[in-house]
Each structure stands twice: as C-alpha cells, then as structure tokens.
Image (cartoon, rainbow, N blue to C red; front, side):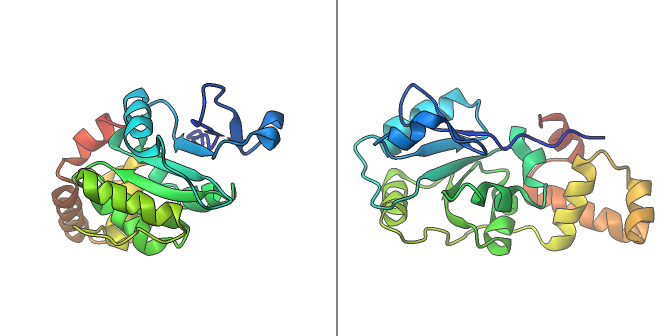
Length: 205
C-alpha cells in the first residue's frame, strides 16, 4: 500500500521554522511575524528565491498566513490525491500554487476544481505580474485567473491511475474503458504535460 504523503507545514518567516500544521508549535502563539510556508518542504532554491523576491518587506494585511505550494514534477504524487487541497485548507491558511511549466495543466485543473486555492503564480509570470498577484493576495483578493491548457477529469483520473502504479490493462478493467480510447486519452495527457508517462513517473518522488 502506498504511503500517504505528509501534510506537515512549517513556517519560513524566520530561522526557527516552527510547525504550523497539523500540530502548531507552542511558540507560534507568541510570534508577531506573518506566517508563510512553502509546502512540500525541501526545495531550498525555491524557498530562498521566493523569500528574497516576493516576501521580504511585504506586509500581509490579513489575519491568516499563506501556504505557497511547490507545484512541480517531483511533488506530482501529492497533487493526484483528491484531498490534498482540502487537507491544507484545514490549516486556516490561504493556498497559493507556484506552478512549473510542465504541471500547469494540472494546476489549472485544481484551480477549476477547488475553491480552496486563492492564487496561482505561473513559471513564466514576469516580475511585475508576480508582484501584482502578491499585492492582490495580501490585500484579501484572489489571484487565481488561469491561463494555458487544462487537464479534464478523464485525463486527471488517468494520471492518478498511472502515478498509483496501475497498468494499462488494469485501468481498462477498473474503469471499463475501451483500450483504444484509453490510448487516445493517454496521448492527449502526454501532449498536455509535454512528457511521456514513463518520463513523468520517473521524475516524481
């Protein structure tokens, strides 16, 4: 049975890196810093660049903090979990996707599907657009207008099946789908993501 990915969220507002969710560290209640987090943790390059570029000297006017989601290929398995956005939303923090180019169609799928996501920053957003989006978010407005291609439900479920390690023949049996139609959906999925299923699976954690 595949292990469920961790939903632990740590703050990046200072070097203490306090846990915010699901169990909040005791010292958090005495902290006066705005709560910001990158989830999943582990992308040091994104963390450093994001803090320096978009968070330093920026004031959050809202009472709740933000979880910036590292929506990239290594974390793909997490985003085929049907409950990931709802689970993060239980933290009470605002959710913003930081999407790489390849996963943009999946990020757009979640923007349409979930009302828990307040914003998305695309990999090709220039500095001005990024700053505008952050201003909107930190003043209580949405920045979740999508652009680019979007996975449909059938493609999402197919991706979920492949990520779970289910074979073509097993998918045919589980979903009661004609194998020719399945291959058509697979080709469309690969076309949208820009990679073969084999390469996609080999690049995830």
